[in-house]
Length: 121
Image 1 (cartoon, rainbow, N blue to C red):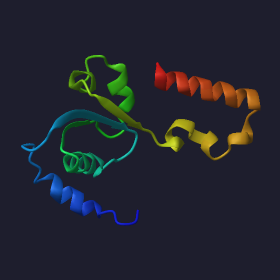
Image 2 (image 1 turned 90 degrees about the vertical axis):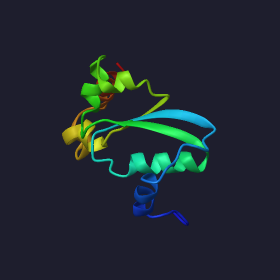
Image 3 (image 1 turned 60 degrees about the vertical axis):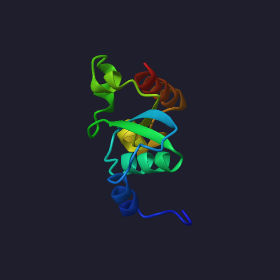
Image 4 (image 1 turned 60 degrees about the horizontal axis):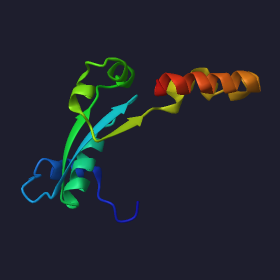
């Protein structure tokens, strides 16, 4: 992005954040299927720039499914105001990522429905 800071800037700024001048608070959970290094710090800095105190919970690497399915997980104990579920399409689609037309239209529709149900339910 034009005019955006480098990731290292956000990492360094996040270590210096003070919540003294914050007018609002938000709790953000981040669940993903791959490494999300730097995202948490960037969100916290961006919130601080808007005078929002941001508390974050970030799930372990590729632990989104376990966190969602376990009602006693740290994710649920955190009580987030907003949750980002960031999933790698290749992880979800498997071999169909490379060969989506290797199965019929009906099978693709069923596959998408099944995967959607897994995520939603």
